[in-house]
Amino acid sequence: TRPTTTWAPPNLPSTSSTYSNTSAIMKIYISCLLAAAVLSATGAGIPRLNISNLAVLKSDNSLTINLKVPSSGWKIKSNQKVVFLPVVVSGSDTVMLDPLTVAGPRAWFYEVRNGEETPFLVKTGNGKGIEYSRTIDWQSWMERSAVEILADTISVCGCDDDLNLFAGTIPLKVAELNTADMFRAPRFRYEVPGDTLEKNFALSGRANIRFMVNKTDIDWSYAGNYAELDSILASINKVKGNPDATVREISLCGYASPEGPYTNNVRLAKGRTEVVKEYVIKHSSFPESIYKTSYVPEDWDGLRQWLVNNPEPGSKEMIAFIDNPKVPVETKNDLFRERFPQAYPGLLREVYPLLRHTDYRITYNVRKYYDVEEIRRVMKVNPRNLSQNELYLLAKSYPQGSPEYLEVFTLAARLFPDDTTANLNAASASMNAGDLSAAASYLQRAGDSAKAEYSRGLLEAMNGDFTLARSYMENARILGSDDVDEALKEIARMEEIMLSGGVRILQQEF
Image (tube, rainbow, N blue to C red):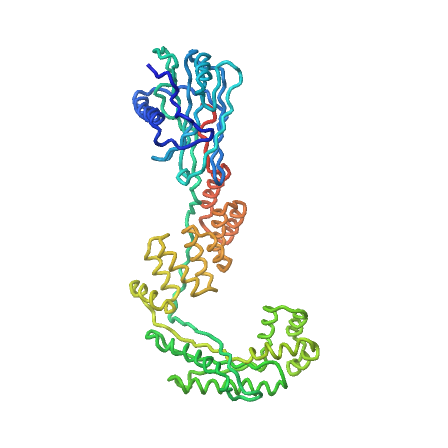
């Protein structure tokens, strides 16, 4: 004999809540699960629930379930009611939505008289039916979950019923949610960096050394000159202190500012470079034979770059003048001063001292490492000793997608920022780790190879732009990529998931 009260929890709110500890509902839910085993074992069928127009809508912060229940077509007695309970479930996590009830005339009157009706109640035969809609807060575990409908028949008279339409009915799964299913790349593309006989590296820098006006002598009264010269020595000593490195060449290039006669600027740039060279040779232990010097009489490129970085009235015209190849180099500074008389004094005072500098470049090579454990050790203490090929070997020693795997490939991109192979591999590792923003940055410097276009297609698919993804994949096909078809199949699968909001309706009517 069934109870004469409804099984819905007391004080049911108008919006859905989680009733994980509500014993009454959980008993019904558990009884349904137990009955499922019986029905499965006996081969019994599932009674029709007479529900239609199911829709499951996922937004950023909520999940909405809509359905329709008619008032007619129910084979229940006047003192019976059928109660439906929509639930969202994933493993042990469950959210129960507000129940909805179809009641016979006596059962409906009982509900209304006692004020115990659910928010959704319809009397059989009244012709109106129920348009059910409930929204619940989105929870992370719902990313992979299911929507089920539980149903039970209840008598309100306290007597045995001949008809118990839904007693023991199994939970009926009506929809599946899969919003966490990222794009599964058929294969992220990596490229093996070329291996070379020698590992050549270079360390570059700039020293802004002040000289005596119109002379090649260092102005020692300017305290900053000691620090500038020491910066060159510090870089040299850094390479010198590397036991695996051999210095091949130290290049020094002196620059003069574009003022005064051109021939005098040639003398100043050349003489000042030699003075710096003598100082560095004196304070380091490398032979003079490895030093190479050059000079630039007038640093127009430096002035141009300053104007680009610090635009002011007339900057575009000054840049156009500097870029004009028809201006004679011997008289260029005189013509510049005459053409821009208002700007020239400020440039002479604020900018020209910065154009008198010495750039240096230390070229060296490092012995090769063949053992992965040694490469691992070198990466921790002196990663600049490693070639791309050595970093690639180290990355492959880690599980794909692991933090160490990503760390090595992104380090390679930092050490070799202009190398297309390093950027392609870093992009693939970043996509594998789910960092799509970093992957996009790396792919900007990954070149235009088939692998790069393929990787751009994967990135756009993961970002949800399937049209652009297909375009990149077709480019990759033209360039010779051999696994585009597999990628396009995955793109189509992911597009279907995203267009449906990650929701798959298993049946509209049941």
